Image (cartoon, rainbow, N blue to C red; front, side):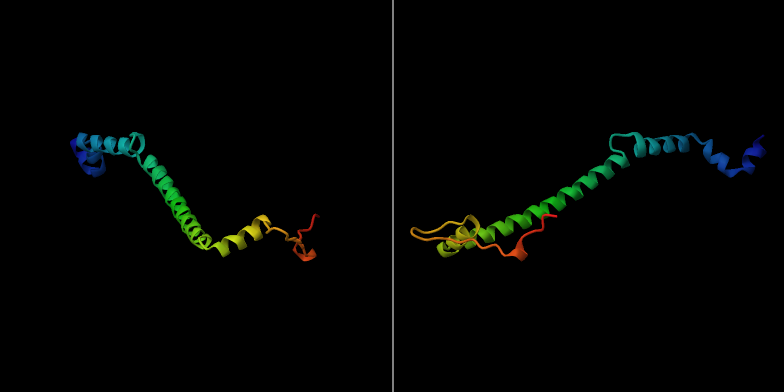
Length: 107
């Protein structure tokens, strides 16, 4: 029987207890452990999504900072208030004209 096992070298490795213990350990760590590959993949994907959000929020912050710097000038603030909120000075009449081309079709 010793000759049969020696003629198949892969059987010699599979019957080695150190190999079996190492294989079981690797399978356990890769699939079943709390620090498994699947959990690491999910966490890495979540980190990537959060970094993208962080970059978008940073762009928004930079845009808002430039807007705040523009609003430090009183004439810019007045122009913005007139355009966005239709504010007016005393004894002033404002006419809002909507062009037919600028209206959205209600189809």
